Each structure stands twice: as C-alpha cells, then as structure tokens.
Image (cartoon, helix red, strand yellow):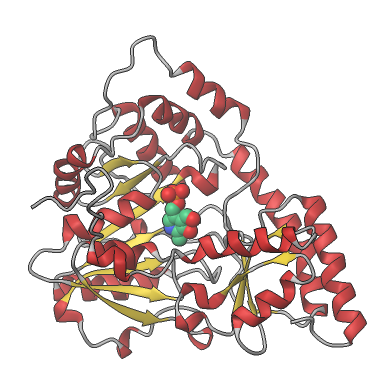
Amino acid sequence: MSTLRRHDTSPVQLSPVLAALEQYPFTQLDAWRAEARERGLDVIDFGVGDPREPTPSFIRDALVAGVGEVSSYPRAVGLPAYREAVAGWIARRFGVDVDPATEVVPTLGSKEAIFSFAQVATGGRRLVAVPEPGYPVYERGALFAGAEVVAVPLREETGWLPDLDAFDRWDELALFWTCYPSNPTGATATLSFYEELAARAREHGFLVCSDEAYSELWFGELPVSALQLADRTNVVVFNTLSKRSSMTGYRCGFVCAAPDVCDALRAFRPTTGTAPQEFVQRAGIAAYADERHVDEVRVVYRRKRETLLPALETAGLRLAGGDATFFLWLAVDGPSEEAARRLLGHGLLLAPGSFFGPAGEGYLRLALVPSQADCERAAAIFEEAGARSGEAPV
Ligand SMILES: Cc1ncc(COP(=O)(O)O)c(C=O)c1O
C-alpha cells in the first residue's frame, strides 16, 4: 500500500532509518551561526570543511569547453579518457599501475559512492565497522542498507589509528572503513597499518574501504594510499577532486578497486542515476593532469595553519591530531559542545568533536577554510582571549 502523501490527508511515512536518525550534525552548525549573527556577532566560520578557495581557471575552462550542443545521458562506466586520467594520476602519485578499463569507476564526488557502498557490497554478512570519531556517512549509508554498524574507537594514544587487536568481530564483517588522512583528526596512516588490515581482510573475507578524500592535503610527510599495497584484492579506495582541486561543487571523484567490485558498481550505478556528467569528467581530466595548482593550494592551507597554530596554543587549545588535511583537531578541557559555544561567543565557529561520535568528546575540529585575512583576525581573537583571561577561552 502506498504511504505517500495524497492531497494533504495522508502523511508521508518516513523510512524507519530516517526517522530514527539524529539530525545531520553539521546542520546544527548552520543554526548556531545564524543565531550568533542575529545577536550581532561577526562570525568567522571554521565549522564545515567546504573549501572556499577558487577552482583554478583552467579547470573551469575545461568544464565550459566540455558542454556540447546536445546533452545525452552520461554512462555510469564513465568516459575512457576520465578513467585514463585517474589511472595516470594514480601511477604518478602512488607509483601503482591500475587498469582504467576494469579497476576505475567515476563517481559524483565520493560521498554518494561512500553512502551507497553498503548497498552494493554487504551480502550474507551485515556488519560494517566505522571509525569513531569519523565522517558520519559510513554509518548512515550502512544503516540505510539495513546493515549493523560497529564503531571502532580511535584514540590519541594510538595516533588515531584503530587498535586492530582489540577488534574481535572479524568473521562477521562485510566492510571496514578507514579514513586517512583523517577527517576529523588530521592523522595519517602507514603502509604497514594498511598491510595488517588488508591481511586480516583476506583472511576473514571482508573489504577494506579506504576513504582518501584528503590524500593531497599534507604538511608533513607525503601520505600513503591503500592503493600502494602489494595485494589489493580486498581493498576499495575512494578519492575525489573536491579538496585536492577545490571542486566540491563539481562532484567529481572515483572508486578504484578490484574488477569484481567495479563490476558490481557498474551494475548498481545505472539504477541510481549516479553517472557523473561528462562535462564534469572533462574538468576532472584537466584537474588530474596538473599538480601545480595542488602545490599552490597546499601553500595556502599551510599559511593558514601557521597563522593559527601559535595563537591556538596561547589560547590553551592543544593540537592533538596529525599534520594532514585542512583540519586542526584540538583538545579542550571539558565537553566539546560547551567549548564550541564559548568560542562562538568570541565570534569563532568550530565543530564540537562530539559531532563525530562519542569518542570525539573533549576535542574541537577547526576547518582552515576562511580566508587568510579572516584566519589572521581569528588568530588575534584567540590570542587576546587567551592573554586577557590568563587562561584558555574555552
Ligand atoms: C572524510 C570525507 N570523505 C568523503 C567526503 C566527500 O567529499 P566529496 O563527496 O565532496 O568528494 C568528505 C567531504 O567532506 C569527507 O570529509
């Protein structure tokens, strides 16, 4: 029986998963910002990780040049030239050869592919392991697929890597999600960590899902990829141009995995209508062929990091996370939400660590997305607040 609203008499019956879900945490930040602005505060927004750097003009030009007179449905398999551009980038960046025909699937950014992956790849096994603190989409996608979710806590003492020896449900597992460089902690993984996890995946028959959205934003050592494993049989990598090339609005990324996983995605995706627009893929081809703009964007974020880090220290906010991504993961005394609210009183909007799961309690995440001028203004506010009170403002 249809439960859709007819005229205005019968209410829409929500999916029980949707009804049970808490609000997407970041929509709360919008409400806080609006509230603070209503109170007359000039808010500097370090909340959501949406880059506000311009997309390089050669990428925009490639998009425009890719818009043809006739616009047909794109194919889920993607343009061969886009898949080749991705494979070429993987070869140059990670020194790994992947087959563009069988091992690369284009995606609309990586969020949709991450969300729907549990629908494609949880069969007899229904358990999905997600990192905590972590990006909420792994869990939400698994729940909508009817899977069971187990949170794997990440802790500062272990460098924000999961303690694989403490996990004991390997034989029930369908998917194990990782995210390095990490949102929200900025931590990076080692190849030996991926080796250990992939060995367990082969032994117990699950897939390692490696979300590498921030692989190009690094300020210490060059991050490794799970693609660099000698045996990639059980490994699925998700990457995107959103952060690397400041292209969040384009929705352009890829999945790289073994041919059987890619076959499953190519079977699923025409049904969901998630075939990326060809003019976007043309822009993606241009973006993947160039590294200079990526070097330049790293310089921009590095300068913002260096502007803010000393001021944060003066304010008593300790950098507790790693040195990659455009996030600073900061330790605070007491509950995250209270700390975030106090900072909002100074006109600074940061995301409470608790928005990333209970293991994020006691931390704040600062996204280095405001302009350099606003970061300088914010640094002065952090410093002044720290100096004036002689103690942390949070
Ligand atoms: C950890 C992580 N993974 C994936 C994504 C998805 O990015 P996109 O869909 O823009 O590629 C984001 C976006 O913020 C993210 O933070």
